Image (cartoon, rainbow, N blue to C red; front, side):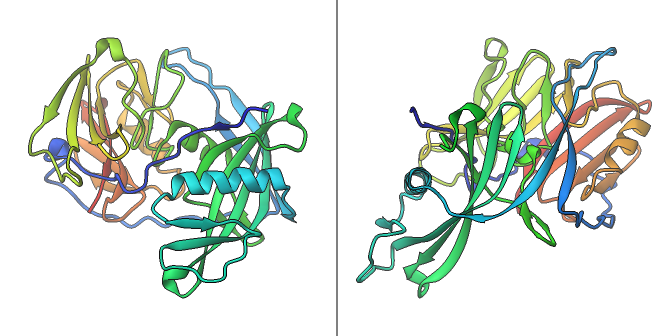
Length: 341
């Protein structure tokens, strides 16, 4: 059976560009907003926006599913091999990675051993089953310090017991009293290579989602690109910043020579065929923006001025951010970007 491997989010390319300097610049005020307590139930019902279009008569289809914690289970040798191969392919800076059943007589500081693999949770979405697996590893450079990695696998329901596809590494899990969980939103984030699903755009006619740190590979026929000088920090020789210009939209990305890929930092749009993941589009009222984002757990209103609102999940505005610009109480521009200190 063919084994497929999808790339996961690059670690560390979290940058802010000078492209955003001046946005909502004078009336910046940091506000505290309490987060509600996470659910403590053993099972959780979750709603996910499956497909929408940006039109006045659009219909949003809601998909209901149930997330369930499973007992830690033994993992088949095929699954262990799949996870080990993935870990080795992604963490190539270790000179050697020992498998679970491989004896270690003497290890160097730049070596690591996979000590244990267990399945923590699985979830059914459509015709596919997803499972989260915990890899516990020993790092010899730190006196055998152990660290856990969480990797998401998938398989078709027709594939029986064999996990066939690595979706990627989960960099966040949602802690509950009875353990850790992942959600459909985590799956969508990984498949679209996003830093945060809630800080992304939908675009009519485009199957994926657009946002930091995804790929600027949409609307290629409309794109005009130019290299930006003195735009931000350059981390490696051969790296550079790029401005991608589309009708009524600009995208700033960072090119990594090490990975030979572009990752989005900023999307600024005035297009009417785009909307945020939570459904806000050009022309919507300020009241609708406030009503929508005041209800999202963990969202903080970091800018509240006459002509702009900005939201983040960090009080200092680090990480993913979203800014709405207004004229006559209507949205005229939306900017989603990744701010890094």
